[in-house]
Amino acid sequence: MRRVIGTVERPPGPRLVASVALVAALAGALAGCSPSVSEAAASSGGASVETGWHAHPHASHGPGLHFYALGDTGYPGRKREDVARLLADEARMERPGFVMLLGDNFYPEGVESATDRRFVTDFEELYRGEELQVPFYAVLGGHDHRGRVEAQLEYAATGGRWRMPARYYEFTHAVSPACLVQFLVLDTEPLHQGGTVEDPQVRWLEQQLATAGAHWKIVAGHHPIASASGHGGSPRVRSLLEPLFDRYGVDLYLAAYEHNLQLLRTPRGLVHGISGAGSSARPVGTPEAAIYAKGEPGFADVFVTEEVIEVEFVTVGSEERLYYQVARSP
Image 1: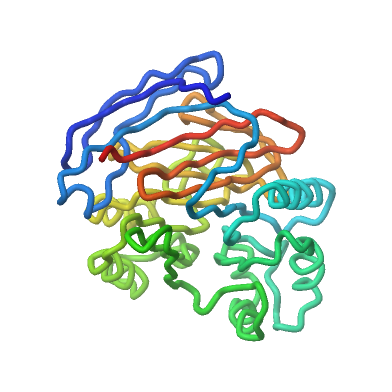
Image 2 (image 1 turned 120 degrees about the vertical axis):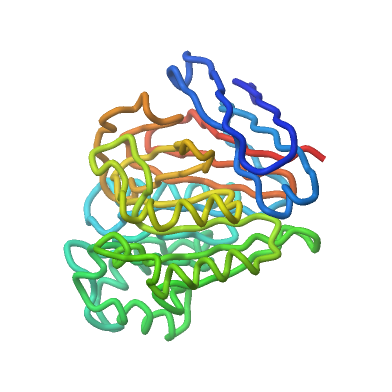
């Protein structure tokens, strides 16, 4: 049985800032801003509805685009094996269209060639079940840059599930003939280390966002732009990306880097998920700063329809499912 925790409805238009009080029994004293609205929705006058936290047992989503997102998967050990097993268990109940790996795919340093044994041990064998024989769209993280990043592109070129055609790239999936979801995958490490607005990647991102005709826009990178945990987000990445996210109506930004699970709302209203607990877990320093925060191994389960993006967090050893919903009214 699904239970609605809180709902906020707002009039049409670009991002508006509003406050949302959610029930403390499940998520603490949570607050947020208005939901993200894509450029297409704003121009068509569609109102937006934010449906806050819900709790429910696992249930099939029905028609739509379903994918998993997890990052910082490179540490070998029991936690990583537990997450991989949970991923497979969930996929057996409802197979995803694909999986996103949000960076730091290999620790402590990246791979050096497409024949590196870690592609077998840290990827092929780790996610080996039939239920996970789907594309894995990979993001580069800081530890990947300590190796030879071209090796991950070269491995993608050999065929198979590993997808990384370039350091930053775009792909699309159709929810229905009338609903296209655009995914923009970034290499945030160079931006974190000293990127500027003239960086070719930043200009590429703006061009992609400015010309997109997609119903939903989802961006993925390794570094968060905000965080309730130790790293606190990357100020430089935030300064470069957030204005573009705001200007072009990005609906969701997915990142890792922090070894925990979080959902935040920036002051400008961006929905920001952090899923960096793929092989280790750290406590969240200031959980009250997030809508959701948990220092447990796990991943994000994302479901997209024409009307809604739903972000659910799945953790090892817990039967509880909490999901957050950003929806559009007709």
